[in-house]
Image (cartoon, rainbow, N blue to C red):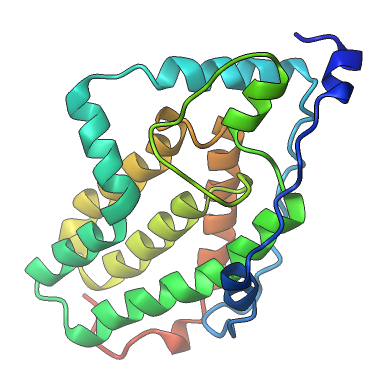
Length: 217
């Protein structure tokens, strides 16, 4: 672990939200009855816990070219992959369009939480500890909680209500997407765990009356 004095002399500049994200955070949120989900406080950067998490990230980033290709695809297309699976199972346009609305509203909630915590990504933390970590994909928001994780789990939950026979496929995409955030080098494991907690909280506060009227199985 790097000496605390050296750590304090190193600078991590907090990220300020761009105009894009400021507008995103102002979007109306109507499909959840409560969005104030309690999350654990992230560990301090000079802690042994963060040192251990950083090592977990470094180890997870070592993978086969095939797995890396798949995870890069998830990074960009995980929502489209779930929508495609639902469409192949007969999902109506109203449900597919509702997935887009879920994404918009969840972004409004989670992007705000990200900037509230303003936790740096593993790359920045590694740098102040005198280490080099080059993530496999690019990101430009704070780390905590994992937005990819939250959106994937919520969308999978909603789609499974209408198409339970593809539940395993949806769960696999959502969970692979969540775990890939660590192995792609852009999240600490605790970011993903916080994402799972927040996703579950939002699912429990999902306003059922706002779901599409398409008959659920």
